[in-house]
Structure formats: structure tokens, C-alpha cells
Length: 509
Image (tube, rainbow, N blue to C red):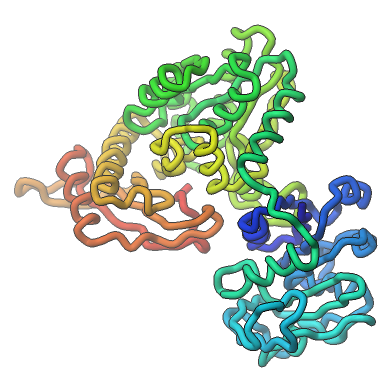
């Protein structure tokens, strides 16, 4: 395995994805990870991520300097390289010219990290500091027009630094560079597959939940469904899935989920009808974070009620993923900025007295889909677009009411139907409708109207960490707009969201 130290880079999850694409397992930990824990993890190599800080800033993240004495190869990327050079006796200085975006990398020799790489290649830079002086034993291995030391190495200690970002697609040969580090330098083997993950996860679940019952909140989405299938394979009927109708689901959602899991997958499923409780609790609430927290707390209370009805329950299972943890709080105590909270991250009330099982918490969404395929789940479920835990509540901007839910449900159903009919559903990461908190003037049947506005959101992405708005054909957008305005009472205008992530998020709330 490869250990990744999170110094706060927006790309740290991307580093992990690139490592796993090489079928090598990796794990992200904060800079303050104890030396003993590093030893216990027994990594074949360590990657120090980039980060927004300057090494000389007060409070800049730092790892224990003894990390360089672990005895395994270490690769520092951007800030990670600067931390390495500064800690080992080099000098980091404010660059005369900051370097952001594409740069031409000139390589001094096709060896080590750069084995098989072109003499000149494009790379992606994002830094305001540079290496002024290398520590003893290091030599520069690449440069750009603005950065004299764009890469450096100490082959005797197996230490390597890259001032640019090899993990992003803007560095075309970056994947090859990371592969050189993993296989030529760290001597890793390609053992990270979904088959191996299932074997290990099943063993862990059986060991952790021995002779105990587990309950799992089933939403019908990919994450909870794959978690349910995995845990069911491990403990069978000792798993009880609880489907909570929280009142903010899409059209016909409950019936489809129950039919799949009870009739086809033969799992124990309890149905908790609590829609009115959720909508009532959301009355008058407009702040998106308050919505998420209200739904999360009430979701737990519903679970408490269901748990009391099942004897011997000791565990609550959740479909938490890596990006959930990253966007909710600093990654495992790391310095990554908080974006938004997730309803399934943050622990459980002490009174609930249930332990957590989160078998997917180290997986990305694309890995979860591969896992679902390996577990035999139907393609319709595996390739289902993500749906937020708080449901339509965070796709209604402003207060959530039964009337507004009814409008959005119908508009969203029409949108998805048209996207499928046009053959775009599988090409998009997400596509959904948003009900805006404003009205606009329109004309219908020669009469003035003053009604709601629906925004359409459709994006392409690999992992939801970044996303681009989808350039859907005019004919598809026109068909969606025409049907929504004609078929959904209370809507007289449809707009299309053409913002990317970042700076926007995929969901509006």
C-alpha cells in the first residue's frame, strides 16, 4: 500500500485515484499521523500531497520529520516537495514569478520518476514558492522557464520531489510518472482489485459483527445498495435494511427500491413511513445546512425507533465514501477545507449505543460501481446517478413544502425520462431539476402567469471532486423545457445551469 499525507491539496483525492488506477491500494492520513502508526501500516511508499499554504506561514501543516527515516521511498508533490526540501536542510523562497497553469517541463535524464518520459513534456503548475537551494545529496532533475528546480531527487535515500502536479489530466505523462514511482521505485504489485476488496471486507465484517445483527439505512442509491449487498454476503439474514420514506424522495422511489431488495435480492427490508415528520420538521427552514442537519437528526431518530424493534442489533451500517468524508470535514483531521456536511458523516448519538460499520469508506464512487458489478447487482442500480441523502430538500431552494415537492418531483421525473430517451443518462454524472425560490411572469393561453422557475443541472465528472456542465444538444434541452412547462402546473420558465465545479458545487445546496 501507499500512504498519502494530506497537506490540504484540492487534488489529494485525485492522487489516491491515480494510485488505485494502477491497482495499488492507498490510504490518506493527516500530517500529524504518529510515527508508530506509519510503521504499523507498513507502506511500500509515501506521497506527500500539495497544499495551499506556504512552508513559512504560521500554522502551515507539517509532518513529523522522522517520516523521512521510515526507510521507504517518498514522493513530495508541490507543497509536499517544499516541506521535504525545507525539513532536510534546503531553502524554499518566494518565487519571482508565480506559476499557475500549463508549463513546459524540461527533463535532464529519462531515469527514475522520468523513465520513459519525453525530454520535454507539458505539466500543470500551481505554486507561489520555489526551491531556492537543494538539501545535501539532492540533484535537480527537471526545470521550466520560470522554475529552475521543477523536480529533484536523492536516489540514495529514495526521496523524490515534483513541483508540478502529476496527478491531474493537464500533465499528460503524469500517470506514467506515478507508475514509475509505484513500480520501479517502490516495487509495488498490482493487487488492488474489487475481488480482493470483497474478500478482505467480508472477513472484516464477519470478524467485527460476529453473532450480532446489523441495520442499514437503504436509500436505493448506489452507495447504500452496494454496502447492503456486501454486508449481506458477509452475514446474511443478520442484516436488516431499513428504508425510510423521508418525504423528500423522487417520484415512485419507495416502490422501486422495496421491490428490488425484497423480491429480487431476497434481503430483510423494513419500511419506515415518516414523510410527514420530515416535511413538518423542515417547515420554515431555508438554510441548506440546517436542512441537512434536521434531516440527519430525524433520520437517526427514525433509526432508533426501528432498531428497538429488532433484537440483538449492535451495528448501524452506512454507505459512506471517501469524498463524503473529505467534503464534510478535514480529511481524517487533515487541513482540507470543509465544503458541506453529509448526513451520514459525523457519528451517532451516544444514546443509540450502536457501533458503525462503513465498509465503503475508503472507496471512490467509480470503485463502488465496480464493486456492485462484482457483487452481481443489476446495471440499472449500479449506474444510477447519485442522489443526495437529504433528497429533494436540497434541490428546493428555500422552504420545503408539500406543494413545492410535488412540483419538483414531476419536473425531475420528466427531466430524467427525456435524458434517458436521448441516450444521455449513462453519459452524465448527474442530471436533475432544481426548484428556484423566485417566480417569473409568463403567458399561457393569452393570459398572464406568475409562476415558478425550474433550473436544469447536468454535469459530467469522474468522481464528483470536479465536474463540468454537460453540453446537451439544443433539441434535448428544448424537449425537457417544453414538457416541464406544459405538464407541470405552477411552472412557466426553465433555465439551464452552465457552471462547473469548482467554483460551483454540483448540488445547489
